[in-house]
Amino acid sequence: MNGTGISNPTSVTLSTADSNPANNNNNGSPATFTASNPVPVVSASVALSSLAQNNHELVNVGLVAMASDGACPAPTTFSVQVFGDEDDQIPTDQNEVYSPDARDISIGILRLRAERVSSGDGRVYLIVVKATDAAGGAGFATTAVVAPKSTSAANVASANNQAAAAVAFANANNGNPPTGYFVIGDGRSSGRSSKCGPQNVAPPIPRAYGNRLRVAYARTGPGFEAIQK
Image (cartoon, rainbow, N blue to C red; front, side):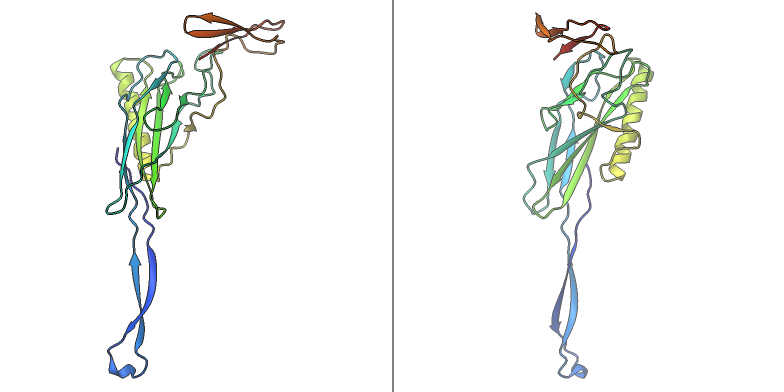
């Protein structure tokens, strides 16, 4: 979706000749000129806007972005932020936490987790892409990815409506997310905890299961198991 920005005009005051003879020797008068630096125009989109399966996998959503800056050289680097209406460090099911839910937060390689809280109404990932030109003018664009509660038409529509509202808010507020959104991707790395609580653990014993590495923990307290990806 195309984004906007705030220009940064600069005012310059110069002395110019005054042709009014009544001024006699006082032949200078100030004139103010305003030079405006239009911000870059940024566009961003994803190839995959809906994560239909709640399979906990990190999926490349195909984030792309472009920028133009009028007659000035267009920015070629972008910063990417991901926000969500569910914190990636809260359990998505009973005693089940996957984190972080965004990795490789950059153009072309951004991965988001196909995950949502089972008791919620679906998840929205709000993506904000920014570009800054050589004069300091910053433009942005927004796009979104959803993980609906289910594949039913009603739940898909609900998630898409929430995403549209989040994008509209960010576009109207300089790329800032709505209240109740969290930074995604800053959570500590974790797998799935089958049980939570105090425990005494020995060093992990790695065991290979296909293309996954399961780390089994010897323990004397309540059980704990983690899957690393």
